[in-house]
Length: 91
Image (cartoon, rainbow, N blue to C red; front, side, top):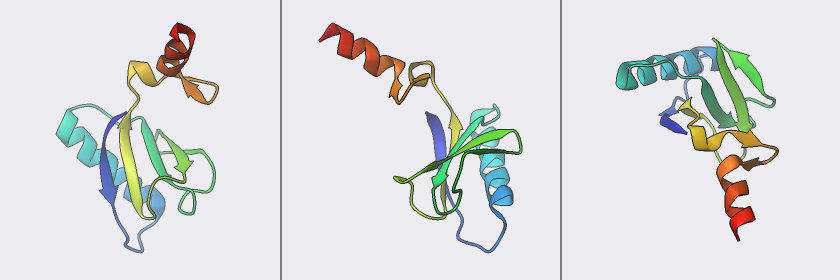
């Protein structure tokens, strides 16, 4: 993923936090964010907010949002990325 890590521990709703992070991403990279990883306690299940796919992750700290776009190598095949599958086959 190419993205930015956004931290917001304010009392604002999660949707607003993700919207603000996505606006910053657009201003920095010139294109819309399509994916956001958030802590599973902040976002307990996968959802879509403001057109952005939001997925819970245990490796993201609370109140942090990794917002960006998937790269071609990150197209998920099951639980492994497509790149990881190619490396397994080559080994």
